[in-house]
Length: 231
Image (cartoon, rainbow, N blue to C red; front, side, top):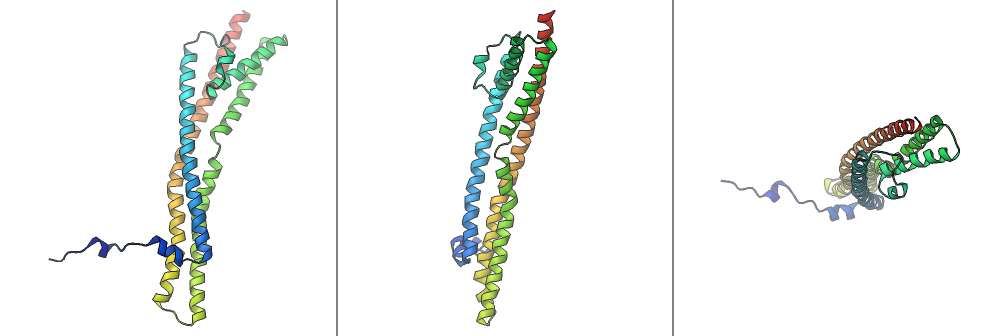
């Protein structure tokens, strides 16, 4: 019976050896990709925690708002720092009461509140989508950066062979292995980043939709309560 060792079937890849076999450009690209990987993971984890906290604040405030009989009688000072939904409500009420100071009609006050809600939705949407461009750039750029290192390394390896006048596998293998390391590094950066990017993008779109729905609900309640108070 023949026994096969796992090590004979799967040779151990010495990443450091491949790294030092790369040319200077390949080593620089690998180091850059390591930095991009750390940056991507920092963005993904930080963004996930930020969105989770904002959603928790929104759920809590919306739950309290649904228990309130009047939106117009809410304490505006107590809304500060309580999340995007509270910020939207504060902006709408602030616009409403500014309209009252100007002795404007109810229709004008409602319009001011709705405009404030629209501006608030736009501002908060930008906050939701912050850092996504950076993550998307890493997702797109990492594979191409790795490919650049591989092409450069292979070109350098074949150039060295041409200068030496002999082409053997022993001569080519180290340079090609070092060159291929950049492609592997690029994929290692890009693959988890693209999953994280798609997940965060989906969560962001859902939260923007929730924000728009909440703003519409607040506008409806302000209009109804304003009509009742005027009547």
